[in-house]
Image 1 (cartoon, helix red, strand yellow):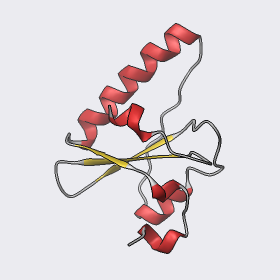
Image 2: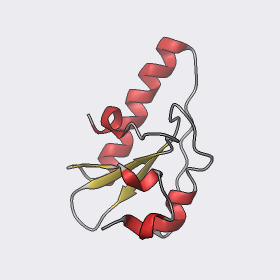
Image 3: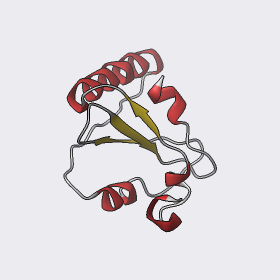
Image 4: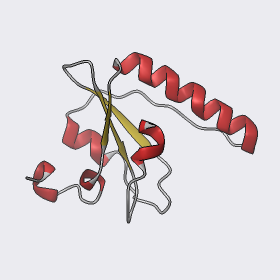
Length: 97
């Protein structure tokens, strides 16, 4: 079974879940990216949004190789979903790890 009948493919082909509250994971990823930013002299941007999942996934466009954006999605459980904007493949493994 595909997510949204593959209308958001390939973003929805591969995504991950982290067993952590949304706010905790957001803070952890911001800290991780700040470490990367400092090391490589770049600057990541973070934006909050409220939207239905299908609309939120569209915010990852345009798709790129390599992926350069992640979408963290709060769930009704203690898990948080992570999507990436990969054109050919989505490297959610780094963010999930």
